[in-house]
Image 1 (cartoon, rainbow, N blue to C red):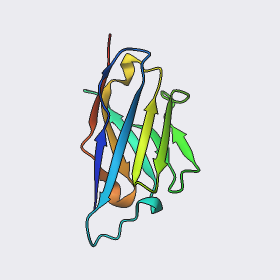
Image 2: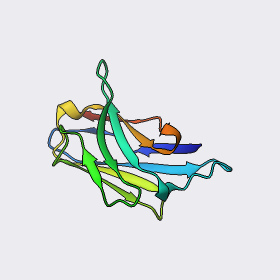
Image 3: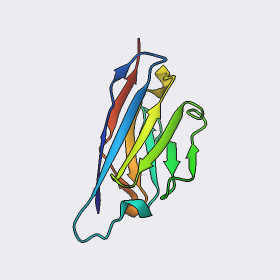
Image 4: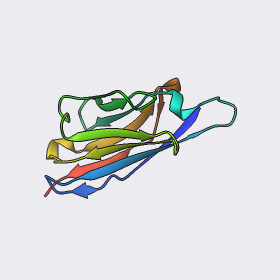
Length: 119
């Protein structure tokens, strides 16, 4: 098992930026090693389906993004700190959602952080 804790969500104006962070910590005895697993960000707005925002490979060399955020968001990871980040620029009202951090290890999820884009 792994614990994932997101932070950085806030109310921002359209066109603004936010940086989300996800801190991972393993439960003793699970054998989870952060650097061995892909990480990703998902989001879900009320009444909408959950959608992939961004994903990153274990070593950070490969990334992919949902079409709606491509060119605006950047995912990164720091394997020395067991953290993954999502830099969000040029935010739009349509980006309003709860953002969740996910690890490929046993399909683990954080509790989410709220991002609201509104003037």
